[in-house]
Image (cartoon, rainbow, N blue to C red; front, side):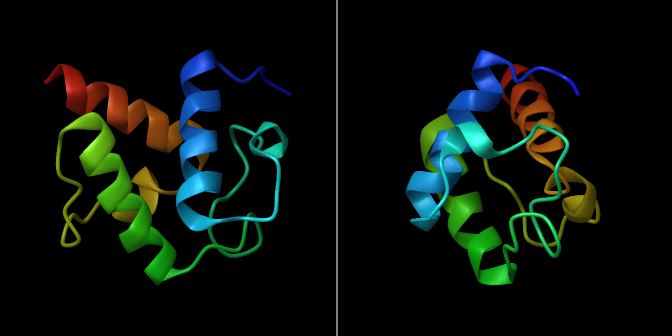
Length: 88
């Protein structure tokens, strides 16, 4: 199992706080699915999370992006996308 990075920990806390999840952010594994069988998030959660990410990190996640399934597939994929988008 891979270790969680400090930035992944920060984004995990953002996910838990934004969506008022009843889990500890430290329990979110970096490669665990965020939707479906993982954390069980749904499309409404994705919208709320996208707005929180946009506000905190200063870039827009587009609802019509064909890569959204990959971007939101796991904590690690999401943090990689955020880091890449912030530096672009």
